[in-house]
Length: 440
Image (cartoon, rainbow, N blue to C red; front, side, top):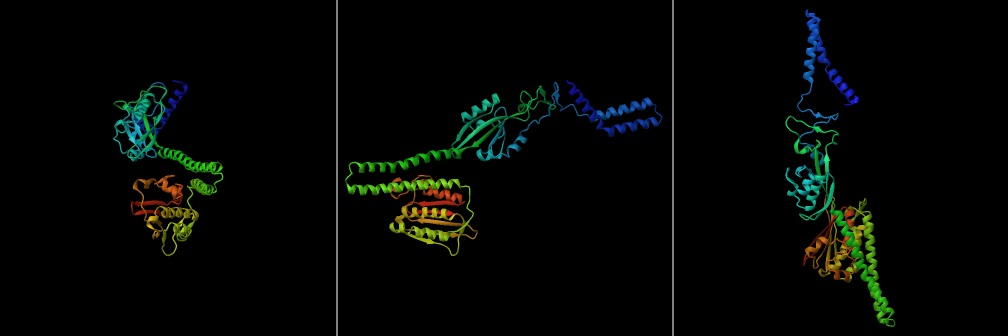
């Protein structure tokens, strides 16, 4: 024991004695009363010492429950089951987290874990829920070595999700420099105590990276599809130019026909580049919601008039039904024009067999509005409907190219409506047409 430790001990003892001054005064009063009653001074002093000793013994903490230490270390006693306190802390986290003991048995879980994986029975081994060899091996290694570890894990059911699973040891405090024995009147705290005498748990956390993986896949698909879409018209242009420079050098009729095809291919590439640039601009401001009011009635009237020549060429009648008065929503006029041009143009091209399309505006009393674009064409098979807004996705590639589509129109619609905090609802039935509804 060092001099500092000795001095600190005397100070604590002095504070302990002085904190009982009311009892000291009481003992002194008793002894003086005895002396005043005729007792001898020695007897009165002995009486004071006896009362004082009894008071100190009564105020001393019981031996049971104290911590016996070796050397100078002093450690606070630990609860026999600290898992409720840990559970209260991890409930505030949004990651699914499980608290395990040294046998990989579950001690606690937070609400995010219950929501993601369902409630697991406390005390159950983690292999009752995850049979992945990667997770089990990682847990065993961390329990044995005390070193954090992580792996990437995929869940197939109920939906495909990808997680970064991490396990790390957690100590309620740093281990003491000297060995410590914790006594609770019966036994030590058991499995919650490691060999050094401090509580040890293991936190198993799951970080969902499904959206990041999906985004990476979309980027790679986008590059592959864009390069494929550009390769075809470029190959056509190159072939026609070589033909016109060679065998068809003096063939005026062939040149005229080739130039017409080359112009169509150049226009196709131009539309593709314009749509790609439009998508890039939309992604840059996707988080900025519009703050101006736009009346949908004149917007739809403008779109109908601008598409009237196309509808006439396809023998399709655009029937617009709007309520009386204004139907205002928060939006960007130019972007909303682009949305309804894409939807109505698609309805004219792919639903021309029905000979007319219906554009209906509904305005509810609560302020919400929706615009429905319905054609009476062949309809879309159900398996294709969820993927219609993917970039370059086509129900029929040949049909889309013959109608001069880029495969990006509905992707642009989705991005614009996302910025406008609106929804696109698609309903289709084979032989009965398709209904695209924009709900604000």
